[in-house]
Amino acid sequence: MSVSETDKSLRVGIIGIGNIGSAHAHAIYSGEVKGMKLCALCDSDEKVSARLKEQYPDVPVFSAHTELINSKLVDAVVISTPHYYHPPIAIDAFGAGLHVLTEKPAGVDCASVKKMCEAAKKSGKAFGVMFNQRANKIFGEAKRIVSSGELGELRRVVWIITNWYRKQCYYDSGSWRATWSGEGGGVLLNQAPHNLDLWQWICGMPKTLRAECYIAKRHNIEVEDDATIFAEYENGATAVFITSTGDFPGTNRLEITGSRGKLVLEGGKLIHTKLSMDELDYRASDNDVKNPRETVEILDEKRNCHCLILENFADSILNGAPLLASGFEAINELEISNAAYLSAWQDKKIALPVNDDDFLKLLEEKQNTSSVHGVKNDSNNYSNYSSRWNTNW
Image 1 (cartoon, rainbow, N blue to C red):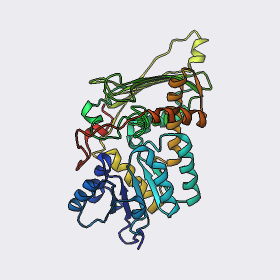
Image 2: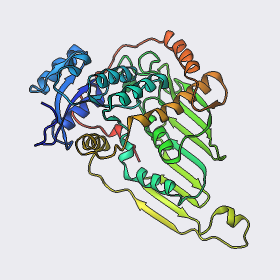
Image 3: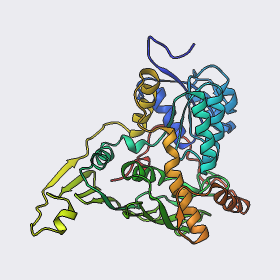
Image 4: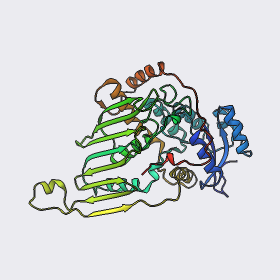
């Protein structure tokens, strides 16, 4: 049995039932995700598996991802394991003829993600990534304005995204968290991929960047919890990206300046300030420019954006809808974070795309000195979506 033509539901298996995997399972099982049916679960932790069998008695539970993939029970898998496992599990799933939706980031290094993309292309199956904030209308409107040319030539991007606050107990909730060997990075690889993706999705990829990544600035961890990136575009435009999990309450403010005005995204709304003429023309004229303001309020979705990405993924497979967050685009934000790490490690400006060999060599050095830590707080049993997964305006 495969995708049903009568109920139009996609049979889905979830691999990795930690914090976010539990939330996806609950959302799909409870019917919050149109077009999806939860048909299998997988987690290598025996305690987690035992809990799942009690929580979802009518859903088969597997201890190995290969068992779920080869079970013939699902048409697609959602991968929500620690980061390093995303590419190899996805490659196995594509090889078995399954569609794949992976959690962000697509992987830790660009080289492994390129292999995942090759497997996806060869399989011909749908490939999505959980960049849920692309489903937020405020970011969609910003992309529309920039892509349409209404903002003119890109001049400057500044994003202060420091409200990804995390307490120490968050990092202590899993032995793999905040380690080079278990997670592969800190705020740039765990929380900020959403924002790095939105940055390049709206404004395009920069050509070079310089970064500072501060290790354990506010927490007892071995990776960065504070980072600043300065990037340059081909046309001379510049971008500054500041992120941290140690600022409380923090700030979330994105400003995009073009030659015909600017966008400010903050406090749940987008403010578009338009110029009556291009700045280049104004510079050479004797005219004054009026700056009428057009404010677009963010709309209440009454849904979590995670669910919207899950629904879009199902809709793409069942009805041919375009993917809002294609897995093939997932490498773009990873190029930025890989370049930021490489810049910090080598103390120099880095051109994009990064040299995969240089990055892997230095990452391996970090992994060799890495150590997992004890789990002090079991926070895996999340029955629904927590507000900490939202972008907090």
